[in-house]
Length: 175
Ligand code: NDP
Ligand code: ZN
Image (cartoon, rainbow, N blue to C red; front, side):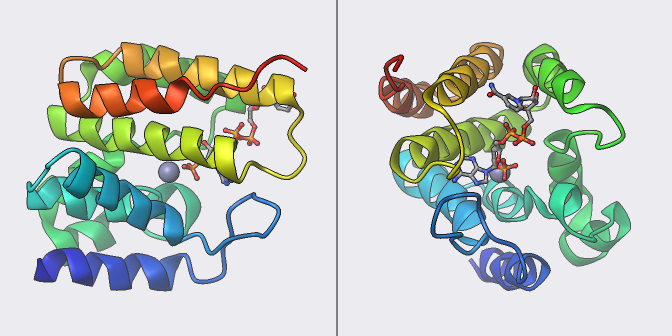
């Protein structure tokens, strides 16, 4: 538990100037906390490395955080899981999205759990507090892409996969 709290403080500091894309520009840290909440309290997950990695999952991708820093603070296992769910930012966006679908089946079980929670949380956000400027068609494309990613990693947690399917059932109707 102490390491989860330490990770939360670390991520809060790293994401302190960032906001989500919703109309209210919610604090970014709400999102990693939501992943850990889904994993622990909807998925019954008590693996500390998974919960810590969930809290840290966007630090390398979206903040000035290095692998070495994560290793020094949280160890090789956690840093490895975060690396597995981090996109290669040198690639164009469409290619990154394609790779997520392609790689989903080949990452570790712990990384699959973090990725599944990320997609659950992002679908819920798009349903409840979407990026302000997204037309319905873009939301629908995101739902389709998230499902393609999750279909590649199924088998890791039937409970969380059902939670995902429930979130996916809220796919917006074509306008
Ligand atoms: P995304 O389409 O990937 O934006 C969604 C990401 O933003 C989420 O995965 C999430 O990532 C983060 N996010 C932050 N706030 C929210 C929120 N409130 N709700 C949901 N997600 C949130 O990234 P880009 O905007 O950079 O667009 C890139 C892709 O979109 C390209 O592949 C491009 O082709 C396509 N595109 C499609 C358009 C269309 O109209 N269909 C128009 C323009 C681009 P995280 O969890 O990592 O924070
Ligand atoms: Zn995320």
